Length: 73
Image (tube, rainbow, N blue to C red; front, side, top):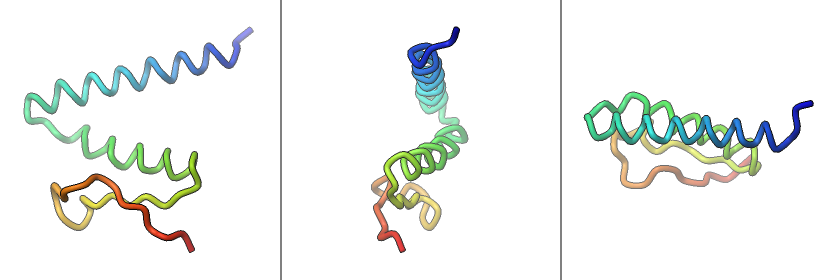
């Protein structure tokens, strides 16, 4: 029987894998995964925390600051 702990472990392992890949590719100057990760984590945090984060890099590349909280309507 699969337990909640098993699923949490799978999620933690998968996120650790992604973090390692982002780090390695970033050192090589390959930032495509970084860009996808920004939007992925923005969406996850918005759903989990019921907030409205916005990726600032959609308007200006390399905006100083990753996310801003916008008012939810």
